[in-house]
Amino acid sequence: MKINGRTFTAPSFIPANIRKGFGLPGIDEQDAMYAYYFYRLIQRAENVTATYSVIKEGISTGELSRYGFQLQYDSVQKPEKISLDFSFAHDTAKPIRIESSEQIVAKLLSKNTDEHPLSPSAVNTYLQCSLRFYFRYVMQLPEPDEVQEEIDGMIFGNIFHDTMEALYKPLIGKTVTKDDILNISKNKVLIENEVHKKIAKNYFREKEGSSKTVVLEGKTLLIYENIKTYLKQLFKIDIGFAPFQLISLEEKYKTLFEININGVSKSINIGGKIDRIDKANGSLRVLDYKTGNVKSKSFKEVGDLFIKDLKDPKKEVLQAMIYSWVLWHDLKETNIKPGIYSLKDLFTDKFNPEISWEKHDFSFSELIADFESGLKILLEEIYSENNAFVQTPHVEHCNYCAYKTICQRF
Ligand code: SF4
Image (cartoon, rainbow, N blue to C red; front, side, top):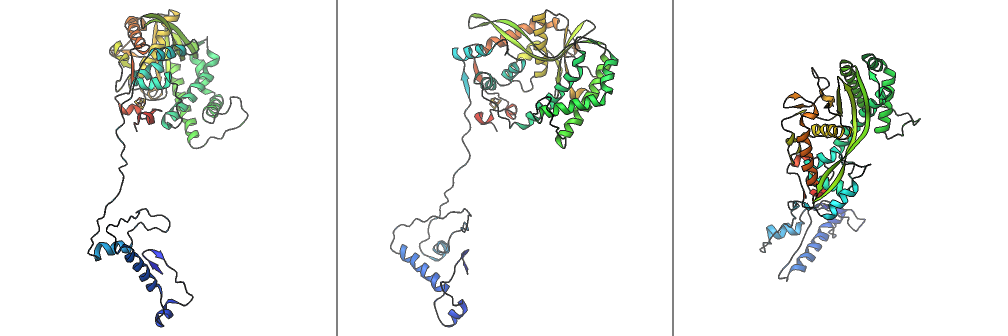
């Protein structure tokens, strides 16, 4: 029998109807007995506090018992009913601000070596959110892998970079003709093999040269087809641009830059891996392959590139410009043209990778003085003891930040 949601078993083998017929005590009497105990218990009490849980769990129905209802509706006592609940809303997170110090600057300087120069992406991180820069480059907090959207884009980018490097590598140092690129683009087996190998390396984390065969399906098959489509288009563009001299692919470049840190002159290593450098018509093109969105390849004023906390910073432009500056500063190359091979733009009419300044193409030497002074001011700020690392005012920049749990920006 079910009473108030609970199943009661009569402590007898005699069925309930027979018990009733012969006037024997049954489940009703048993129930009345418990009601008696309950009312007897509270009979002389001045104050009674009873609680019940609304959680439905196991045999608990999460409802007020019949005695509670009886007291509420059928007694003169009129008990007061209070809901005890908790507010789960947390307090608004307090802003985080880290004041720089002698120790922080010393740590940053000690990390800046020949092997680990300050990279354009570190500079971009600082401009976008100086606190993120602090977490990553000062505290060196590891970035967890679960920022999935960024990871997927990164893997796709790495597969593309690696495949391009493998396909063009035999041409480094040579003058690349239209026929050279045509030969590569027609070699379906070579292209498919390379893309497959790079997916195995970057997606499945297989060692290069591993004999293990990876089967492409679903997402990886999609990546495979997409990379091939982009490669085909890139070859088309390069055929249109050839002949050119291929100087380097995925090679590290760096330079030393003297700045003033807290009144003392110090040299900072700046550099990184440049995707591709080629030369044609007397100009050195410093190229960056971009698989993500590149909103704009032009800028108005050089100084704008160094403004902090912009909603839409021109990260890609600044990166290509820093690489160009590294070459200018280190190799004394004068006719340098920074450019971005944005994969999403490859299919546009009259694709032009060159970065434009106030809507016209330019050579880096035209604005070198302004660029160098902007970079110097920024670096002196990063390495200053009087600096502070603060959160970005644009919460949308936090979406893919590995440290958003620290900042409580969800
Ligand atoms: S969560 Fe936002 S504010 Fe915090 S470090 Fe990341 S980007 Fe900066």
